[in-house]
Amino acid sequence: MSERIVVVGAALWHEGRLLVARRSAPAELAGLWELPGGKVEPGEAPDAAVVRELREELGVDAEAGERVPGQWPLRTPYVMQVWTARLRPGSAAPRPLQDHDELRWLTPDRVWDVDWIEHDVPAVRDTLTHLEARDGV
Ligand SMILES: Nc1nc2c([nH]c(=O)n2[C@H]2C[C@H](O)[C@@H](COP(=O)(O)OP(=O)(O)OP(=O)(O)O)O2)c(=O)[nH]1
Image (cartoon, rainbow, N blue to C red; front, side, top):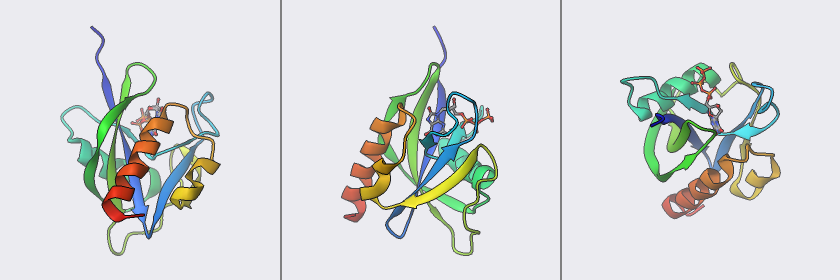
């Protein structure tokens, strides 16, 4: 049986906007948009992976909130789980340090203006529904 590898995606939410990131690699995903994040390392808690990936990829000091219910298959063997996240007071602004070449803060009504990785669409849709229920956005 093949092993599933959990990829955490961060729904980094700030003042009514979601941080979305454009991948710069690999070639088949370059130019497509995603939630920042990455693979959970062996023995690592998923919410700790969210904080680590946000620090490595965007240079921010973030904290993970709750997990968005559900999980979504990506390319085999990956499966994505999404966690809400927010910037801690005093954090630097996000910069595309690794894996990305552009970042945008989008209001929910603009989220579908960018070209998402196809596998992300259901995850992002459910994440917005979750944030809407939580915060009334
Ligand atoms: N981070 C992230 N990865 C996604 C998303 N959608 C999607 O299909 N993926 C895929 C791309 C990659 O094949 C895999 C995650 O890889 P990654 O390159 O972000 O992970 P990582 O930071 O741990 O990478 P590395 O250490 O192996 O370089 O999941 C998404 O929304 N966010």
